[in-house]
Image (cartoon, rainbow, N blue to C red; front, side, top):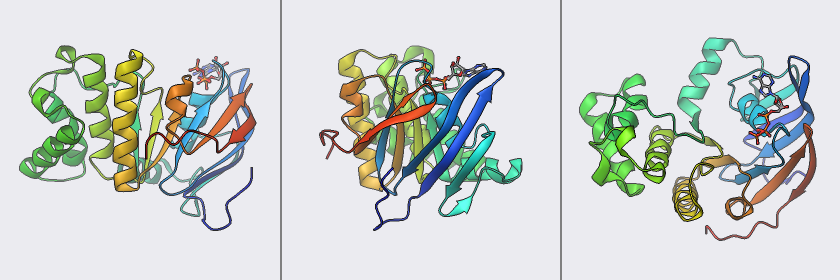
Length: 236
Ligand SMILES: Nc1ncnc2c1ncn2[C@@H]1O[C@H](COP(=O)(O)OP(=O)(O)OP(=O)(O)O)[C@@H](O)[C@H]1O
């Protein structure tokens, strides 16, 4: 890829190779994410998008290749340091929000702050502010089973952003939503990321969702086939 020499990438992967058993999910993928950038990763089913996200987010280790974050190699960090990095620097959103069903929306969002040692009152106050930003403050006392799909994804976004991460990894965050709810959730994510300068690595099948990104990387059979900066800047 063509690196922008004016900025050092926040997150960079070089030559990532990863197999799941006998399936070669990644065959030497290189990708960079700049600070504040929204990058869409697209490609057909099975092309390695989720595996790439899991490697970059430190959830799985690549078999070969290198990942740097802020210039520091992270793919070989001991598990405890990697887990701290995930907790403090990264936020993750999946297709089905994976909220904790027993907790209210407010408590789901407050949880990462409580785990980081924040007091309960402050954690709940920040959680409420983030729910407000995502337009779901009115649902704060509801449990995930009582929320619509779009509301649940907004709560999941609030939970991913509440700790002030540098990077949000979003794996098909709108994949389970109808197109209107999907665009509303994506608008909210792009707006929040732009406002806080958070980078986003976004996996999507949907060209309308990819259009919110600054740049798009296309994978096929575990390799990068194309890259473009022609995404429509609808989120600015
Ligand atoms: N845990 C696993 N065990 C075995 N094979 C896996 C595992 N995870 C992924 N794979 C395989 O690795 C390849 C890449 O999968 P991956 O989920 O990364 O693709 P994807 O592009 O995200 O697909 P989709 O768009 O369908 O989610 C696929 O062939 C998949 O079947």
